[in-house]
Length: 160
Image 1 (cartoon, rainbow, N blue to C red):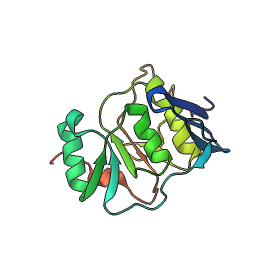
Image 2 (cartoon, one colour):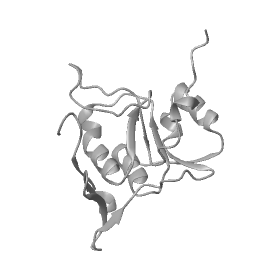
Image 3 (spheres, one colour):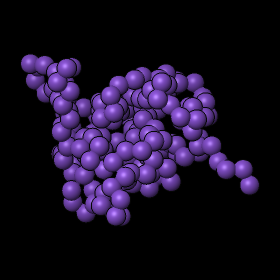
């Protein structure tokens, strides 16, 4: 951590023999099994239909409504930190996290995503930062590659 920002991250999925790592300002890499590590980067332009990392079986009403609002999409499921990595390697466009997580669940993955050129923002599209309050719970957030999209526009708003 430097200035409330994750700067280095390592994610390892032993069952998949998949290893991701990233250093902010230097880049991000993926190593699969015995193969050499290869540089990864986010998908900088949103695909149509969008590829969304998530899980319908664990989706709450807010996520279901969000997915309806973004229109045509393909949902791909993976373990929590690996959803970040799908965005980092360009296999997914977006990971909307509209449920509770803790800072220790996300910091390493955030470093990998941002080192790969992606963004992680709170629902107001401001950067997700660490150690900014007493609680270690994260606010809900978006992980994405195409920074030209304002994902907050697809959230269900309270009726006035």
